[in-house]
Length: 165
Image (cartoon, rainbow, N blue to C red; front, side, top):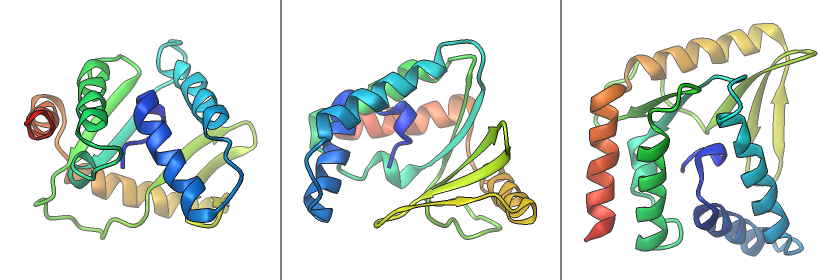
């Protein structure tokens, strides 16, 4: 799946709609999408930097149908050159030194560094420094197997071609 801060409105709507349907929770999809779109402004504020690795499989996991996926790939290609974004793609055939686990995010906060997981039933925050350091190592290992620059752009373009057929 594509990281929320890089999602198009249509992709985010499809993701959140699936969550509401699966969990049977109140339908607050429009509010959730609006909040997600608002949070994306950090990509353009010049104050933040993001190192992101997406698994190549996530470019092909059908979230919302071909037109939604095509628009999402176009968005990734458009934002690819942002100074705030270092986007890598972990090829599906890459040999890795650590088995990728569920998606996680590492954040710097006023209270210290934090790792966040979004699980099916709830979110999990990790703040123990030794565990955060372990996630740093895992991210570094996954990053080492990832493509960046023209190679990553080529993988996204290949997925765009797929969704454009």
